[in-house]
Length: 229
Image (cartoon, rainbow, N blue to C red):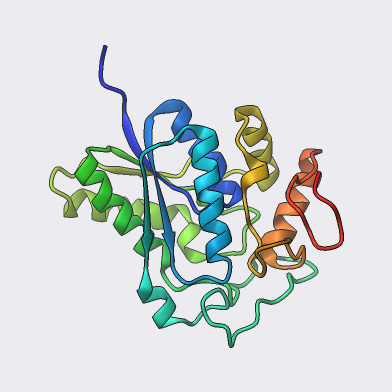
């Protein structure tokens, strides 16, 4: 029997990364990478990562803390002096919001590529989404095309590829895909503000709730003012 294809999946603990991890675990022998960077919901996201790995049967795990992004600041997610705003009433993603963490995904991918080289993984999965998103510039297809060229020229064999299977999907379709895959959406955490109950008002919560509604499903996590399913 041929050896299974090895991959690394970046798993934040959020909805998109969970569905991406379910895809990776279905199709490859995957290892999961979680990076904490001093974000407001750091502990809750790390717990979601561990719980999702348990449910998906992913045993090879790496948890890394990036101090640079916290020290640099400049984002409402890492700087307590910058408030996390409520989502605008319309046109989320029309402008880059204050929750953007400057060049964050480049830091994450660098760690993933380094680990992939060490463990012999040829593919890196990341759940970046361009549609129905907050408008972060490091979630665009052109960004990953460029980063793949950096990986090709900057690694020993130049064969590691970053793949973004969700990047062109609407959030509602991602939820439908997650339900088809039996991804553990009940274990995920997306809220930018809080760790006990989701606020329901930040960009991430609003996009998530809207997507569940469009998908005809109920979000299973607890929100302020309502009991979880």
